[in-house]
Amino acid sequence: MADILQAIASNLYNGEDQEVSSLVQQALDQGMAPGEILSGGLIAGMDEVGKDFKAGELFVPEVLIAARAMHAGMAVLRPLLAESDTPSAGKYVIGTVKGDLHDIGKNLVRMMVEGAGFETIDLGTDVSAEGFVAAVREHQPELLGMSALLTTTMVQMKTIIEALEEAGLRDSVKIMVGGAPVTAAFAEEVGADAYAPDAATAVDVARDLAG
Amino acid sequence: MKPRMSPKRRFLAAMMGGPVDRIPVGNVVSVITVELMEAAQAWFPQAHLNAEEMARLAVTGYEILGYDTVMPIYSVTQEAAALGCEMDWGNPHMMPGARTHPFAETDDLRIPEGWIESPSIQIVLDALCLLRKALGDRVVIVGKVMGPWTLSYHMMGVENFLISTIRDTDKAQRSLDVLKSVPIAFAKAQMQAGADIICLADHATGGMVSPIMYRDMLLPLHQEIISEIGCPTVLHCCGNTTDRLQYFAETGVDGYHFESQVEIPDAVAAASGKMTLMGNINNPQILLAGTPEQVAEACHRVVDGGVQILAPECAVPLTTPLTNLKTLVDVAKGVA
Image (cartoon, rainbow over all chains, first blue to last red; front, side, top):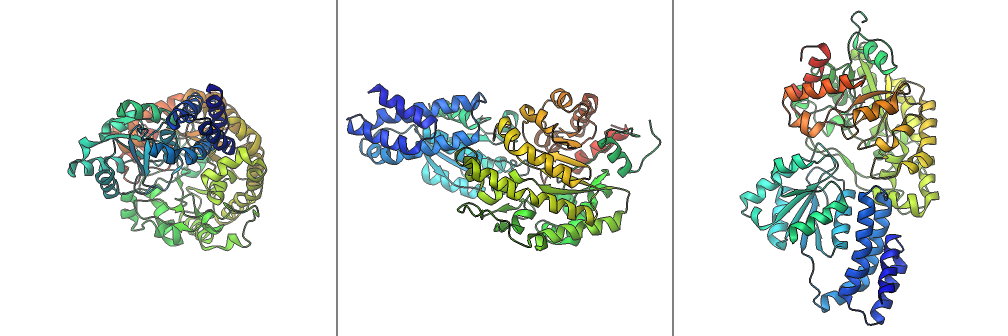
């Protein structure tokens, strides 16, 4: 049994999407619980990817193909997870701030936190303060992630956090920020709860905050 | 020390490793802020789309900030628009971006004929002509072109292109090879129009791709592009590029414009004797949010560290205070 989970994890690491989806199906056919396949196969594989990405051994292209393989596995597993009431790690709303059309970093974080078992709601790019406020009100997530690639747009993060305060929603959600120009000092200055320097760390931070 | 030099002689001398009267201050990417747009009464997005407004806004870099350069190309998407991407040209608080990617779903990677006649390209050339007429030979007029890696992001979409670099290496390499001719042709046209130097911006950034991929897929193309361009050329690549500085030094480029994520001693060690350095002054913490004293401190660190030209690290946030941008000149003049 453990062998197949190991195979799912290593195929996911290598970005073999078709292989991952057929191995997930095989594991189900063998009677393995969806939750076990998720944590022992898919999440375990994505954790390895995150670790090596953080260590500078993998780069964005490798993470992208691993995330695609994760998706392929999840496509098989998701309906069964819903049926079996496997608890999600938490709800995670994410978006790139207003004025910024860059989505690669935001997508990586979304894929990685999804890979860690969170339910994600992706607001896309160029999201206004009103857009973030409305999404927090509607989805009531445990976590909110904001991304900015440009030094010209990162200042929006402060505006968004202020808007959440005004709407009385600030304390309902933990906020994490990231993106190439963002730093821990900047995160503190704008009133975020946490900062993650890369998508793999974002998963650790999300787990800490949700825990 | 040399007797007082004109901004152009000072900047070019420093860039080519010669003696100067004082350290130059310049920019090869945008230093435009909302305050400068107000001063020039030239606003985004019109300043990306109208030659007269583009040139009028660029002049503020010299006349208001006192830099040794002017640089009229504020976005990274003038070529993308000409190559068939649908555009969102943004607004005074938002830089433009490409909404569609013509190479995403096809293997037929071809550049549209006549792209160089497109409005988004001709506007740049017209603006450079206007700047040359207005400023003559006093100030360095900086042209800017996107390299094939950045153009591949626009033409295929960032995720598609990055995935193809490992899943369909042939397609990725073909895209780079095909798009290589764009910066060469655009740079030559910019020089004819009035540019003194060219910034080659190519975002094969640390974290995004490995240094080995840079060496194998892009370095030979950069060598060819830089040798074809022929005028003094600066490479701009964002982020932490420490692990690929040694390869940048092999491109044959004259200068490298680098961000604060690269430690100055690392940059100096890799560049020494091969290319000059500019940049490194942190945008969000120092130029945007810092005091003039903090800006001056960062500038002194850059100068003392052996960087030849004072410059912000990348396109500055649109709300950066003018006082902070001017402090670079005060430090260069020895009054801060």
